[in-house]
Image 1: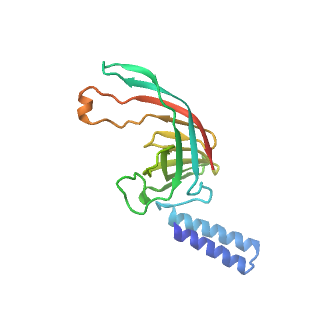
Image 2: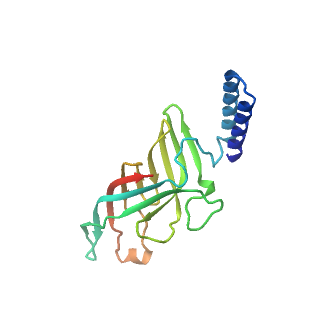
Image 3: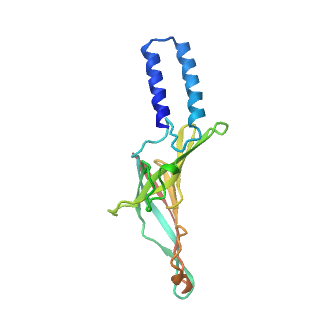
Length: 200
């Protein structure tokens, strides 16, 4: 995809340099767009000119977090949970696979529905709690756009969905405890939380 973008920029610069008329410029631009689509549409690193840039950071503050904890008596009990603040950052996809990361170069995808005017981009994000100093692993998230405007980002691993400068919802993920603990009847706590997000 990087090669395609470079070709597009170079041709547009050449057209402008030669001061060609608007009609010819428009035709060349249309032909170039078709060429880029045919060459790059099946690529895994296809980018768009409207997607949010790498480095975009969203801070989400929990307003409420509630759910259930599993008691040793073998029953669920309703409980409140500590509310957290999450730092969500869009990051560049690693070129090579790393064991701790669930998102890397080969995960990047592009899906466009012209009829519904929606676009889905598979991109890499890091999600960490405020106060945690360890570098979080990257994970694969889906950006959903409507008419080139970002509506929501879904991150499966962290079980969080957020809207830029609006709200977010997060639930407990389905990670299981070791089999030895499951045999003793242990169950993960179940919770759901929601809050507000600010994107810069």
